Image (cartoon, rainbow, N blue to C red):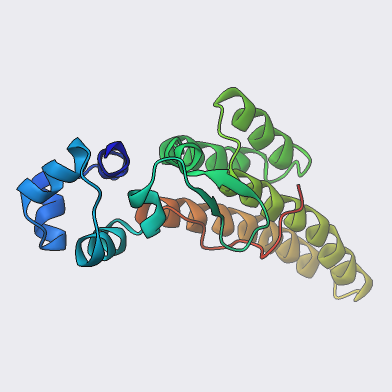
Length: 189
């Protein structure tokens, strides 16, 4: 079963480490990676420990629906997600927080160059698009309140730092849990 091996290696786990986390023997893990299909308790336990759906371990070619989206993808495509590249795409936005159109374009270009067109990248770009729309609205509301030049300056700094915080928090969540902390229930792109 190549799925288990791919998922395990993607999460930087050895067979022994996976065995320790799951309570499944190393020999059973070796059998599954050699082609035996996991069933019942073993399947559920491995899926839970690896934080994947059981279908990803049960059948290599099964089609699954991505949670929260109407798109379909094969398990094989999901396994090609390189989280270090996803993190790089996310962090590329931080260089352009003061130039809002570029904080959208650079991640899009990088996703194409790094061949990472998946729901996580779409969510990263969607969050940046939403932030780019909301930031000028908040700024204009602050200006119309006419609370003075210092308030406007503080507001500008707050807007920029809010985007930096969103990007860094998502990067940390990608490292820890292979997902985004700040995401939308829909995709703008």
